[in-house]
Image (cartoon, rainbow, N blue to C red; front, side, top):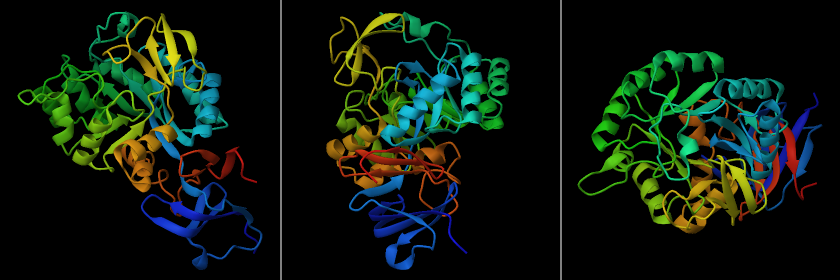
Length: 396
């Protein structure tokens, strides 16, 4: 019987649980049929062969925290979500959680669900991430618009969000020091939403009470949270020492120092730190001057800052613009993380955090055929989503 599928030959496959040389990946329909060394997996009759030579095959990246790209917000409707999804596969991201903040929540969810049902033509929408609205205000001069729309924790309001998401709300950020937060964290756990500590001025003690209530994840570690002091360990101290929680990391080289990245990974391990982009709509756009958050924003060298702000000062950055393939490369070059470990932090770790690891996050038989072909510089040469090649650059 003829095999109607793909056979991908490569010098190296990072699954990321294994690092295989002279390897083969068989794809049948939307699923991975087999992976192993070429000597052990003959090419089936009828298979279409893609030989990527010295390039590396890895699982497609999974971005748990992504607000927008190419001038579009994920909350602006189905067409915006599709536009972002088609950009993401050019960066190696094959699955993502469109991230809703505090504006246009219900309309945004409707558009996300429509795009999920129809397909984006690019990265697979595997759920929704709500970064708020139950957050402590930042009160950063010039970013007042970011605080508008914040709400006090409410179980009733939360259940309205759950209903609107139609079972697809995977992850939600909350500031644990707010009145009613602990009760709401318990409710999140009850209905199967991962509670994340986010945008918080909490003390270490407040953070640990949130963990006891069920908080299990940390939104963009180090950013917008109380730092660690040797007498006041803060939320950062809790994240570094609490084994119950997983952590996000923006590894663009601007939001977090390489030393701080190294400390986080040493404390928690690669199976508990997920790389995220936290991209906003200027991702993928050329450097220039834009309007965002009701303010003028200058994008330069891959980072956006409020017009007139001084680079390096707290509170001046207006968003993250670098994609996950760049952040993986940063971890390798700036921190010394191995390629398989860095890839794991962008694939299997995020899949596990949201309970999607049974079908996403690694190259294993039976899982979705979400693959990326990369080189040592983390350039993207081919991206596959559920067995379909959705991006190709330089590979026949």
